[in-house]
Length: 553
Image (cartoon, rainbow, N blue to C red; front, top):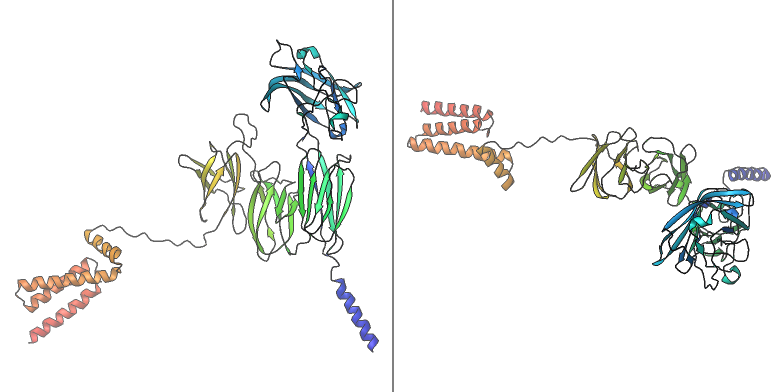
């Protein structure tokens, strides 16, 4: 019997154990990306070589880093170049960039006389109309083919020997005036700008509730890309590279948050923080869409308390592990304005569709221009986040007012003539009015939530006194704080007593005449609205009884 009970208990324990998760799962992936153009800049050192020649070569240590070169520029002071005395201040001529029989690109090369850092000199430019490095990689010299005489015998010096300059390393790219590999021309400063994309990808997951793994992959379009990483927590430093490396690596951690810092070859830095497993059971989710057209938008970055998600191809996003609280949803997309939305979680998940607000259009060029004074406004119901159409927008300052209505998507836009501080007022029947200060500085976005008016109580307007008597009563109300009913009784008694005294003085204090005066006082008070007509009935009865009593005597 004991064995049966023991087996039963073990069986029940195993069943219960199957419902307990072995680990609270947390995983994700992200990347540090840089695609707006890479740039190198440095100064030459001491130089004793005075040879002069036109620029005819581009030298690349790793040409694969430059898939789409757009522009190269460099500067020389008045001792670093020579130019015909009668040459114009600026000239450009076409060129082809070739390796052997292959043409990698074409554009224009030229110069412009100017200054840099307060020093007079000459700028030399190469502007590429197109560039395709084909399959070339590694150390390559590219020839610039153009009519050098068309640049008015522009000649450049500033030779520099890499072996003695102490530069070294794969990140240095220069212009050379001949095909030799040991001497490289470097400007003062020298810059290369291109649409090179830098990618360092990383993913993380936890094997137990206390051990995390982080994997870093350095790549550039399938080519390993050198970078420097520093990875640490509050208790320990795990990685701290002091030179650019191109190998992938993995690290294990025993606590979170994990701080990530990365630097690419162009001294651009990136950072992120991995916060581990949060404990909340709720989420905020929805879709991202264009506020004006209501079309779905993907690749929107949404952040709540450092928890991040990217909207997918259907515009859907979801941020989990939230607790009941008030939050700020941060919104970022490269084609729209950044802005925040406040929301709260009680004991339910929150569905929150996110409108993305664009930038204004330049009336002269017809192009989108973030510098144009522009205000995009989204108006929603505070209780259910539904768009409110036909809301009336007023943007005003001390001198000017602008007006607009929201469309069916709750979106409205205003183009003020100037940047500056304005007051935005949003009105809609059935809602409380909204008023806030807005600083318009180029493209500006604002999100407005309106509250429903649950019950509108109509207040009857206080009648304006029209007679002297009404004005007198109103004065007593305002000055002494007396209620109108007591003021009416006071004036009624004064009228009745006054009339009685007047009639008594005329009749030499005959009682019946005095009563008759008081009776007329009652009638007058009723006529003035001081007493109810019911008083007249009572007075008549009293007068009749008094007269009958006097008659009987």
